[in-house]
Amino acid sequence: MNYTKKLTQKYETDVFIVGGGAAGVAAAVACARQGKKVFLAESTGCFGGLGTSGMVPAFAPFDDGVNILADGIGMEIRKNVSKHKPLNSYWTVINAEELKREYDRIITQAGVEFSFFTTLYDVTVKDNQIENVILGSKSGLFSVKAKIYIDASGDGDMCYFGGGEYEMGDENGEVMPQTLCSLWINTDRSRVKYAPNHFVEQAYKDGVLSNEDRHIPGFFYDIKGIGRGNIGHTFGINPVDEASLTKAMLEGRRMMVEYDKYFKTYFEGYEDMELVSTASILGVRESRRIKCDYTLSVDDFINRSTFEDEIGRYCYPIDIHVKNTNKKEFERFEKEYNETFKYKQGESYGIPYRSLIPVSFSNVLVVGRCMGTDQKMQASIRVMPGCFITGQAAGVAAALSCDTLDTRKINIKDLQYRLKKLGAYLPNS
Image 1 (tube, rainbow, N blue to C red):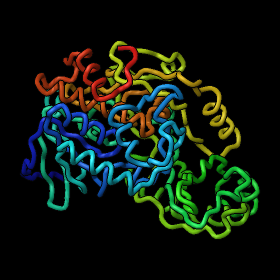
Image 2: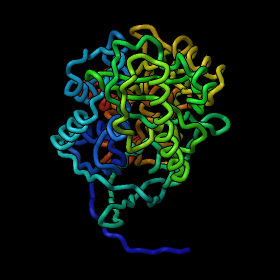
Image 3: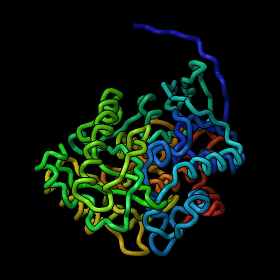
């Protein structure tokens, strides 16, 4: 069918950002602090993405054991949430309501224009530049025009809708499984004696669990009796297909009944546990990776690479969750995460600015889990501190690109200087 409709242009701005997760918030604040006008569209009712709506229970590390890597805007946010936890904690439990309010604060104080419940549906492109984005909300469809565009959607939606080049998954197109995170009460951590996966094989034989999934990160605790769950995988799901995502949400909620029985049956400390809530969005770990001027690769992880156009450094292990329930696959994960791709204290890899520039566009930057990486490196940079680092850099770069309308024409030394003023860790510039 053919469909034509005249749209109202609701906003004209310097920089448009799609997605208000960790990367999108950092980008918006960094850009606004450079004096630029920013409009951010977020499809849910709060900022934070998987850290809030997705109920991901904890921040990955902000530091390498010696240096704070996600410094600047990321650390500013971290200092205002989970204040009772040391800043150098390897995992820091997230109170989602507290984090929502902190994102509200930092965005509004920066003067960023935004709207919740606003979804990107399409873009218009001319001569390798995005001209307009088409958004939908309760008030209907409308357009936004900007000088520079930042894709912080997590799935590379804006670049994909514009016909940009991308990759997804491994050589067979297979991506990491997802998790529907959860919140539980009446758990007694002091009485727990075994790892969360200790009884999986027995539970599978007993028919308590329908999947012999040994990869159970488990519960994270901050308030007595409250367990924030990262348990269960949804296998075989396409994260950029709504029918597949719908199936995963149903499967995720069904699995919580099984895990409730599993923990109550085989473990001490969980006899009185009760499920309070599951997340409103699926915990997607991996989907599209936008092809950029430089593909940050596993070799860069291994070599602890540095770059002339470095905009940050990070250190989280390569964390590719199990592809199936085979025991050997879980052993593969454990070896990679704990040995093969894990740094010593003080070690990190560089992140080049070129990995934020899509090859298909001249006025677009991409941040967060869909930036230009190979699959293995994506499994390191995808976590929230990594998103703060890349988002902050893109926000400043977008501000510098507004005059030329070309993200490749900025002065890298000026970008690095401004990032340092925000607090970014750039020891090689």
